[in-house]
Image (tube, rainbow, N blue to C red; front, side):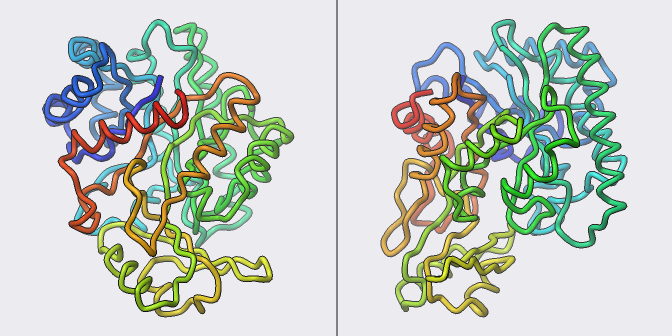
Length: 365
């Protein structure tokens, strides 16, 4: 089932979440002519804790979703809260996997998802951050994070015994984090976690920014004995000649203050240079090779030249996964609608529907 991620909506209480589903998700389902629409549910930590503590509230949420023709097989537990604050930037990586609050939040999401999974779901998935932002991090942090994942695994095993549907945790590599690339995540996870319960969330925007080959990435994950639990179908900005005046002007329009927009430059030597945010990249990177920018752009809307979109990385990754067997959960995750340049914005329900329509046609999910 193809889903869209509800972290695009700001509500952080149950009534607000339901109101936003009425305002956006139900119209999206109707625009697509579907009886049932997949939603990748994002719950801020406070509402997740309240639902986890109250079985009647979980039953209410399940009934409300069903009444609206909405189905949840995946959750996004990366942002802890405040994802639509005026400035998010590095705070999205807090609390880290060394903090007991991150473990508690994730376990709350496990409890909630266990009561929301449709009967026909093969499994449930929960995506999470790649440990933390890269600094500070040490071998002692590795140990603490590993202990937290052992506890998650213990709970996931017990959840399977209760619900007969496995729930799996999906680690999402992101530029600038401890697990910056998929290769970093594979190296850290292999031999440290139980692959039956913990795997990868392949965000194809993040994958594109790293300039990794999507087919080889999928092969390397499988070769390490790991799996892709979930794909976040997303696209980055690409600019072939970032030093031209036209490119600089176009990129500046995407340099907004809310989210972090990491940039990578591929030099002719094959070396990849890094900047932690777009304004810094415009000041410090040499612009001798192409850039990719961590800015989730709508899948169906090609940016105006000289900018391009990396949807080819998305289709390449999904093609490689399809060659291995049934696709994992696929969740369209464009949370940046409200910070796009004015020329790229759309009425939200219409934009989400257009993205999902594109995804159905292009990736055959």
